[in-house]
Image (cartoon, rainbow, N blue to C red; front, side, top):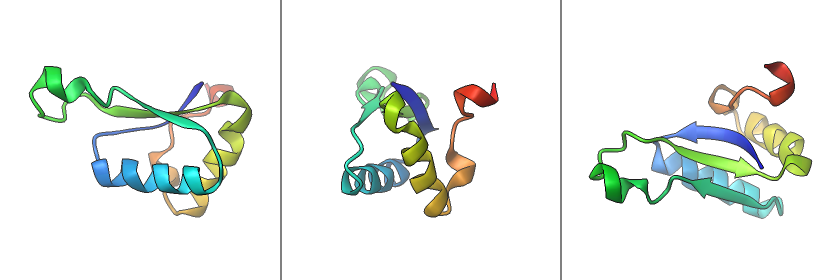
Length: 78
């Protein structure tokens, strides 16, 4: 899986999950339960991970939603 977005914003996470689900893109929100350990301070960002074979489609959906600035750098960009 590849990292699509890293954020502390629960609204953004919910929105992205919605558009990914609607497009049929399997994803996983990593570090979602870390708030238990950190005391709900939102210091540890959540990461939205997408299967590598669907990362380009997912990145395009995020761009189309006007949230390109939230995208993590693509692996081929590093």
